[in-house]
Image (cartoon, rainbow, N blue to C red; front, side, top):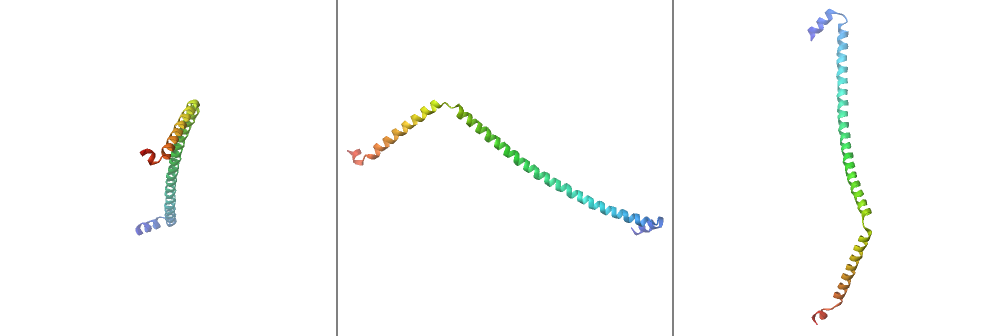
Length: 117
């Protein structure tokens, strides 16, 4: 390196200034290169965060669409229901319930002696 400096000084009096400029530019280039690397790393991190957020949003949208489809099906089932048959079924179930209650009341009102006697 010292031989190179001596040779450069011997060739041109402005060589030292040129060499210092080149050295300074090299340092500046390293600094710029580090900043660019940091910027790319920052972009990569943010891109990963956005990708994760996007995936969560897509998952939520799919779940909401499934819920919407199920709700629309339930609404259609309710709208398509035959009210007459539903009312008949409810009346039948109420009659069965009343009969079961009456039977239970008759059975529980008897004592052990009534059953033995």
